[in-house]
Image (cartoon, rainbow, N blue to C red; front, top):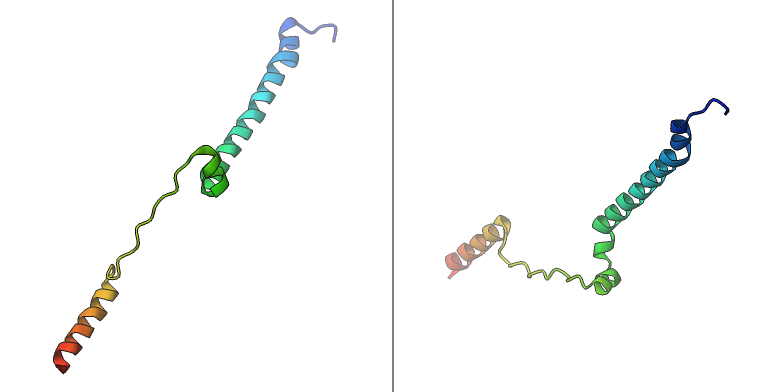
Length: 83
């Protein structure tokens, strides 16, 4: 290593470790972000710790779809026809 210049030493001892460290940190941050968005937000204990609100779901109406409307009209027509 007698003919190595200052740039080679900087590359070996400064640039490469900084790049390796930043690569590892970026992988960890990306993994944590994906885990947070996909899994951890839905865990009740994590929601309680971070003060996240649970989504309040409204109950579904009984006549929300076309099948229920269809069968209700059939039922109403049968009831009105029989009386």
